[in-house]
Each structure stands twice: as structure tokens, then as C-alpha cells.
Length: 406
Ligand code: CS2
Ligand code: MG
Image (cartoon, rainbow, N blue to C red):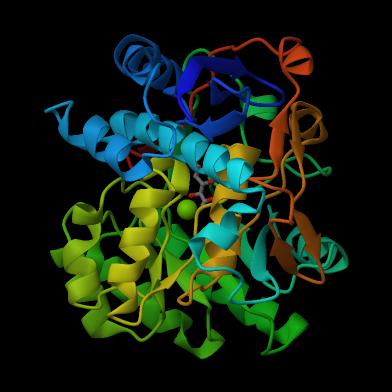
């Protein structure tokens, strides 16, 4: 089964997406996601200039060899752009292999290990009444786990909080701009506020509902340790990205101070980013997306490595992972033994006009469906109605103007 044609589709139905399309000599079509929020065109250039010319004529069944060829053959290794490009090829090849086999992709990954993947959604609010409404909205949508993000008294718009009136905070449609918008942050104000929010949520919604929170890389290890300890009475499912994790030693400090479960890795792109965190059991959940970590081939290896240390999956599933990347995660979610939870922010109707999906969300559980392959097709006609336009993630500054992690 040889690759006869390869092209990159860039479309922006609600937000920018980069999709790789591979076509075999007998007309099978496979799709892969290479979306890197705010740096999409870097991945497009990497694919079009340095990868696509190498693919035509290759055996589409040789997934492992192609992965190694693109990883080792580039000489320059790792990094978000390279690994998103490799992921796009890898997922498209897995899509092709499963379509050729006439079975859903998870059947090639070991088959179903569960009837569905527990999902969590993004509840948020500028204040407690708005947050409670958002939690109720997500429970009504069928979610059985929710992430909690709120505004902080004294601060303006901050990460993860919708502006109210039902709008979505996922930035592209609401805050698209060719220059990154800036937000103001105050960690001490945040640290004073967050425990009061979880106290109120537990009082309103009870002790059972799995609650998650994203620190989004903003705390020092000591601040993260203090927050983890302050949140212990509220029994979180996880505290995510509690401190920048380029320095794994930071997680040693946090881990030694609190039993609140820790999730890290959405900005990681290689097993080597995780190596210390996994072997020293400094985290409980692997947060990567298939799209940012070199594809199914690579993320499955990371999860097998993590399983030795009783670490589970919590794959990244925001709207800046395309439905192709979302579906790839769901096939892994269903097959892996050490599954934990799946982020599911839900794409916009415009996005789902272009990406025709077959995954389902029923009774709080996601399932990739039984369509051969990934189960996602791209309506290229519809995609052409949504041209790319520059959109950057915000930049954070502290109250004195110092640039800070967003
Ligand atoms: C967030 C993401 O979903 C999450 O956990 O960290 O929304 C993140 O901000 C975006 O993916 C960045 O593009
Ligand atoms: Mg996150």
C-alpha cells in the first residue's frame, strides 16, 4: 500500500487547524492532525518543505519505520513543531492501516479495554454564581467530571474563564488577534482565592463529583506545594501544570509536600520530557496530546512506560486539538489499560461542519465509534470557506509588568 499523494489542509472553522491528508495508490485517504496553537504555519512549512517530499512512494503500512525515519533522519530532534509534524504523518498512517484492515483503529491497539472513556469539561465563571451555572450546564450535558477555573478578585480576564453571557473562552473566535493580547496576573491573589472556590463548590455540589484544576504553569514549586496542600480537603481528581515542568526537580518539591494528584505534560513533546517525572513517580497523569507528542506510535510507548509506575493517561483535549487529533486520543483511551480521563472541551459547530466525526459522548463517556480507521473525515469543500488567519495565545504579565507564564 504505497503513498501516492500528500497534502496539508489549513482551515479555520472557529479556530486554525492543520490537517495532513495522505492518499494511497489504491485511493484510501488518511488524515493526521498537526495543529500547534499560535504556531500553525511553522508546522505547515515543516511538513510541506521537509516531510511531504519524502513520503510519496513509501509503504504506508511501515508506520514504525516511517516514524523512526522522520525522527532520526531529521538529525535535529524533538520540539513542538517537529513532533507535531511527525504526529500528523503517524496518525494519518494509522488511519490508513485501520481503514485497509476494515476496523476501527483501537482494534489494532489491542481492542476495547472499557466501554467508554470518562470525559471532563471546562466549567468556569468570573464569580461563584457564574461558575455554579457553568458546572450545572456541564452536568446537564452529561459530564461526570469537571474542571474548575474562576476569575480572581482584583484581576481582569485570566486564563480559562469565559467572559460570561455564554461565550466560550477558547480565545480564537472571541479574542483572535494578529498580536498576542496581554493579561495581568497576581499569584498571591490567586492562591488566596482558589481554596475558597473549592470550599464553595464542594459545599454546593457535594464530595463525589470529580473536580480538576489547571494551574497553567504559573506557580513556583513552593507556591504549588502550598496550593496542593490547601486543596487536599477538597479531594481533587488532579491539579494540572502546577509549576513549569522543564525542571523536573520542581515536581520533587511539590510531590514531597502534598498528596493532591498531579497532572503534567500538555506542553511536552517527547518521552524524555517525562522520564524523571515517571521513573520517580512525581506525577499521577500524563497530559500529552497525540498531536503534540509524535503521534499514536510515540504516545502509546510513553503510556506503556508510565504503566510500569502506575501512572495513567489524562490526554489533552482542548479545542486547539482538531477532531482528528481528538479521535486519535480516543482510540488510545479505549485500548490502554492505564487510562485515567480524557479532556473534552467540545469543538464549535463550525469546526464540526468541516470535520465529520463519528465519536460519541454518552452518559459522561466518550467512544471513538466503530467506523474503520479514525472515524473522522474532512469536508474539504466546507474547509475552503474558513481561511487561516493569525491568532495568538495571550501573554501574561505580573502587576509590575514582568512577563509571566500564561
Ligand atoms: C489548557 C489548554 O486544556 C488545557 O488544559 O491548558 O486550554 C491550553 O491553554 C491550550 O491548549 C493552549 O493552546
Ligand atoms: Mg492545561
